[in-house]
Every structure is written in C-alpha cells, then in structure tokens.
Amino acid sequence: MPILAKIGRKSWGTRLRIGAMYSALAIGALAMLYPLSLMLAGSTKSIADQRDNVLLPRMLISDTALWQKHLEALFNESLDALNIAFDTDYPSFESIPLPAADAAPGANLVPLWREFLATGALTPESIALGHYWAPQAGAFPVQLREFRRHLRTKFGGLDKLNATLGTDFAAWYAVFIQPPAYLFPHTVPAATPLAAEFDSFKLNAPPWCQTVLSPAGFFHKLYLKPRYSADIAAYNAAHGTAYAAYADIPLPHTCPADAPPLVQDDWRDFTQHSLAPLWLMDGALDTPETRWHDWLARTHPSVIAPGSSAPPMPQLAHHAQLFREHRAAIRHELLWRNYRTVLDYILFHGRGILNTTIYCALAVLLALLVNPLAAYALSRFKPSAGPQILLFLMLTMAFPHMVTQIPVFVLLRELGLLNTFAALLLPGMASGYSIFLLKGFFDSLPRDLYESAQLDGAGEWTLFWHITMRLSTPILSVIALQAFSLAYANFMYALLICQDPKMWTLMVWLYQLQQRSGPGVVQASLLLAALPTLAVFLACQRVLLRGIVVPVEK
Image (cartoon, rainbow, N blue to C red; front, side, top):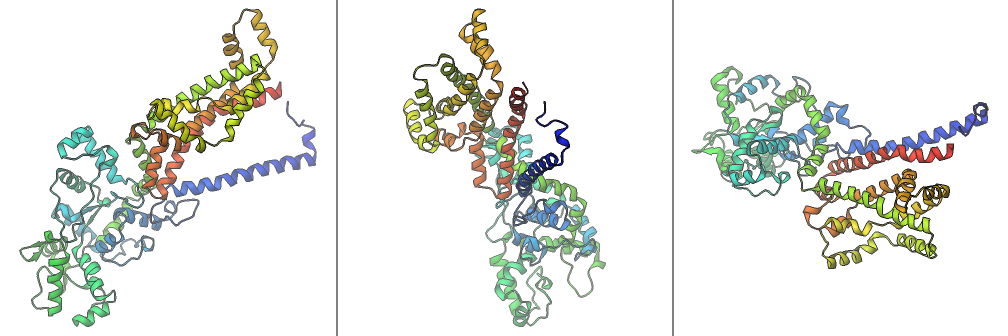
C-alpha cells in the first residue's frame, strides 16, 4: 500500500511537499545531465574546437564549424600545409571562413580543375591524403582506418603482411606509414613496398580526402615571406615590383632570364636549396602548377588572359564545393571518429576485452561463492569468536589498497603467480565488507525455515543453497555488482600485478591509449568504458528494487 493515502494527498500541504520533492529530484537529474552533456560534446572534439565549452557540438548546427574541423582533418592538423596548398595566411583553423557558394577565388575554374584531375596527369607524389593522420588528437581518421582495412583484405593476416612488405608491425593498430613531406629538400619518393601500397591506396581515396601539393604556395609561404617579411611592400621595395600580395608572384617554369637579378637569384636558390629535387627536371620545374598551366594552354587557352600568367590551382574553391557535396559524410565521420578510434584500438590491441571478460566473470563467481559461505558460517553457527572475527574482517577496510599492493605483489612474486588470473583474483576473493553485509542479511532470515527444512532431512548444503541463497537474491545482486565494478575498474593493481601486455585488462589498454591521445579521444574512451558498468547496473536494478520494495509491502 502507498505511504500516503489518496485522501491525504488532497491536502495542499501534502501536495506542496510532494511537489518540492519532485522538483528537487528534477534539479538533481538536470545537475547530472549537464556534466554528461559536456562530456558527450567533448568526446567529439579535435584541435579545431578543443576550446569550445558547449553542450552541443557546434559542427552539428554550424556549417562553418564543420568546415573548420574538416580542413583540420583534411590537412592532418597542419596549418602550414593548408596555407601552402591554398596560398593563404590563416592564423588558425578556427579563423577560416566557409566561402559562399561560387564566391571563392577561382570558383569559375573548378569544373576545369576537376577535368584536369580526371586526366591523371599528376604523379602520386603530387597528391596528399587527408583524413589520414591526427598526431595531436590521437585519433584514427577514416583514411587510416580504410588503409588498414585495405591491407587486411589484401593480405589477410599480419604475418603475411610483414613477410610480403618487409615490415615488422606487432599489431594492426600499429600499421602506419607517415606521409612524406615531398615539398621539402632531401625528400625522395620512398621505394619500399609499403610506400607503394600507400601510393596506390592514396590515388583511389575520395576526392574530399585528397589535396594537391603546391610548390608555388611553398615558395610564397616558407621561402619569400621568411626572407623578405610578411609585408609585400618589403618584397616590392627589394625587387622593384608592385605586387598586391605574395600569391600574385609567379614561380616560372625556368629561371626567368629577363627578370631582375634578385628574382633570378631567388628562383635558383629556392629550386636548388629549398625545394625537393624531384620537382626539378633538366633545369625546369615540373610541378602540379606547371602541369595545370600546360594543360590549360593546350585545352582551354581562352582562360589565360593575354599578357598574364596562368591562373593558380583553385583548390580552395574546389574543396568548398566538395564540402557542400559531401557534408553529411564529413559530419558523420567527425562526429564518430573518436569513438571509432577507441573501438579500433581495443578490438585490435592485445587481449584486453577477453582478459577483462574472464577476470570480471571469475571475480563475480568467487565473490558469490566465498563471501556467502563465510557469512553463512558466522550467521548459522554463531561461533564464540564471531564478534572478534567480524571485527577482524572489518579492520581490513581500514587499509586502502595502495598500502597493501606492495606486500601483495611481493607475496605473489614469491609464489610465482605474477601475470596470471590467479594473481588478479586471489587477493580480492574475500571481502570483509561483503561478509559483513551478508551476515546481517542472513541474520534477518526466519529461523523457522531452517528448522522445518532440518525436520524434513535437509543438510547444511541444502539449507545454504535452497533457502539462504534463494532468499538473498537482492543482497547477492549488490555483492555481484560491487565485485564486477571493482574488477572492471581495476587499473593500478592490474598493471602492477600483470606487467605482461598479454595479460593487460581493458582499463590498462585504455590508459595506454589516453597517454597518446587528445581530450576528445580521452572523453570518448571514458564514455565507452562506462557502458558495461551501466548495463550491469540496469540488469541488477530490478532485483535490487524488488529487494527493497517487496519486504516493505509485506
């Protein structure tokens, strides 16, 4: 029956009290939802939006925020690579606006640019793969995941991959090749089989994940500006020119014989000392820009105005259009990238899931066997030293686990049990707190049941299993939930006792992941790690509530 009768609920004082109780519960729920929402939003973060403190990721409601995160992933978190490719001077990814449709510089040339790319005139060294590397965020972007999936499909096992490509990867999560910086001097195309596989994969990537290297942008950004300052006026004063911006300065195919001596010196010094030699063929530049200009002169000469140089590569306008065409796929990738990173890491990283499953299952089984037996003996037989035994068991709670870890480690080492499941299970098999709870619950069970069962010939095992355990389902659920939570969240002890990576549990692997990851991946790992505990609690919730409500109703 309810605590308050229907008649009692009709008074205004009672209604106000009930309303105040529900209001307090609602405020408490909202207070818990706020940090949870912050964590959910934080689990999608990368470098571009890591300073945002919002309840909803901005990329879900703002195309500009999504564009900025996309550019960060497209250029593998390198702002210099973006400014070189686009020939711009953006100070950060957060400062890059989304160009209006057909309003970006060179938007009218995008159809011609796509036609040029479709001809296959560019070498593999000219193409850079985006959404592949996230060194600061620590995530596994879509193209890195696809590259590993491509290798698994082609070679099957890791041993065959290592034997065929001459690599020594220890696990699939470690399969990676760093993209070469082909613009910088002393950089030559890699001649390894893995590099050849990467180049083949790179050329088949989606267009919104590809960019074209720009030696002209490299010339402006990392040669002229450091040499003559970022002010174009300083360059004009030194060269006797009148350019409006560094982007207007051409990078000729060959050394300009009719140009001022300083311009010629800049060309020779840049091509011989600052640019990778693979872009120089027989004293002339062979770059994506030169091939683009030659193709325009052959196929669309009307695009080049008389007396002017060919237009630059319209990469910014091209990628702005690609962004609008593939906006849903880009948003989906950036929203779930951190979660997929965590899942890929734990699924292909050692035996973390298997070890954790075995450990938690055995911990719960032993907790439900050892602790009830000890509590049953104290409750049923009531030894004369029972209070002293119970006090001794309770005293174990006075010492934190950090104090007992070193003696336990030394003991297990002497017994030769390190790096085994026995080392994980034996020290925590019996719990003084659990025995204390179970004894109190067993003491409350009616003695008449035991006497009746004994008159029918029941033995102690029957009394324990069929009466005590059957009537103790709620408290056993509490013990099981506690045992699972302690085993599942056991990190420091598991790392100390089992230093062999083959015996590491999920918490240890996630700790290793968090050491090399940014805040977004860390928060995603914490949320995913909390799901098993939540699932177990929900599974035990009905039993716990039944143990609370049913005795009250009776």
